[in-house]
Image: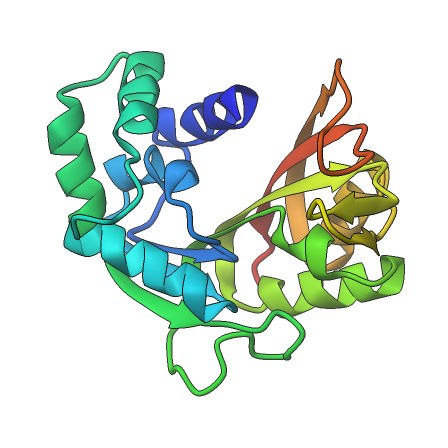
Length: 224
C-alpha cells in the first residue's frame, strides 16, 4: 500500500491534475486512495457495485462509531506529503465526498440512471482488472469507464499484473492475466494520450493471489 499511496500523492501534489470533480470507480470499503486528491478536489463521488462496501464508506463519512479507523493511514499520507494537520485533512476528505453511489463497470454507462456531466478525473484502483474475465473484457470495461472522463480530463488506473488466480481463503477464482504494456495499450486505444505508467514488482508472494506486481497509469483524455 505504501508505494500506491506515494504514487497517488505524487500525482496530485504538483497541481498538474486540474479540475474540481473526481469520480472513484470501485472504491470498495476504503478511502485511502482519496486522501491526497481531496487536497485539490472539492467534489468526490465514490462509485461501488457492492452495497456492503458502500455502507462502510458512508459510515466513515458520517463518522459513525463503528466505522473503520483510517486515522493511521491519513497520518501516514500527511507525513508522506509533508502537509498539515491530519485531523483537518480527515474532515476535508469527509466534506469532499459528496456522494456514494452504485456503479456497474460492465454497463456502457457504469453509473446507470445517475445523470452527471463527465468528470475531471476518474480513478479506479484494482477494480477493472478484478472484474474482467479476459483481455477483451478488460478493454470493454476500460472503455465503459473512459466514457465518464471529460475531454482533457485525467484517468488514474491501477491494476495487478501477472495474476492467474486469487483466493478468499476458502475458494480460488480465475483472474484475467494482464501485463503493464497491455494495460497502457488499452488506455491509449480508448482515446487517451500522455499515458504514463510505473511498475512495482512484488518481492514476496502475495497472500491472496499470484500477482507479480502493480502498474500505475495516468493519462489525459484527448479532445474530441
